[in-house]
Image 1 (tube, rainbow, N blue to C red):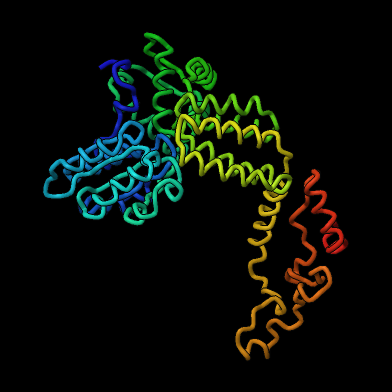
Image 2 (cartoon, rainbow, N blue to C red):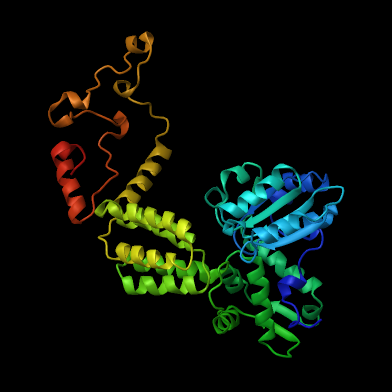
Length: 423
């Protein structure tokens, strides 16, 4: 087998649980998933984690270790018809394993078709996803699955993968390979084992027929730049392009925003992923500078799920342009960040007595609720009183942004709180 026949990552795919690198919490000697596999008592599960951490490999190893039939579907290319054909196939002594890659791409009807088979124990489902299953998998199906979180590889685990490659792969064993530094390989792989191994292969291939090879950061970087792949929905460019898209929205450039969006759409990105990121951005970067932005973004997300591609591209474009041209404020984002930091450091502080509820006579007797001013009993529905513990009285977490709407908010706060909070 030559290096060009099959990618290095595929050649090195583990064949046993002991060969599997990483995920010690799940697959170590006392790991719950390892115990379940060895006892052949595996539940239906969702494997949630970033690309290149071994989700597909783990599913194959489970099937091999438990000696069960294994069916593999991709949510990108399969539909209800394909699903029903697999479910109609006979199983052995134990339910067959049905592995569905990118299960988050299944729509509601596809997930519903799967639900009955999982409920009856007709198959043991193993779904793989890079997206939060709480958002992408319907609650009925999710409640019948155990969610296992797979973590990105750490530096030591990535080095172990390299060492295993040099020890196990016949093509690499024919060469004398040394490393001046691992930094570029670590940085460019981003915790993705598959990307690391494929980059290692490119780096070695770049040396031609040389048998003695020293790998340097400079050489790795040069090879990586020469081989930047087109947009990969599960790879680094996926994150780079969504980052460029969000930064263009934040930077109020509608032209760049629709360009980066188009790059994602043309490459087959899930429209709901784009819509969800716009919803987050509408609150994080626009907020109360234009409260309608979050409403528009939420409506966009719902419309995308109802309409689907290709028509939803028009709605995505409309809302992206709206967000890009809206006034910006991160005041709410900063406020909750600062407040959470304060909360971590002051969790021991009690709620002031006058703010506590007093549902019983005893609570009233010991001062619960005493001195509380009911805002609606006062002019303008406002009465000054302390709402924070004494130890952090006057702490200001919200600072209105410099835009028309939040300047109006600032004026209200100045009238209400003025010197208390420094407005």
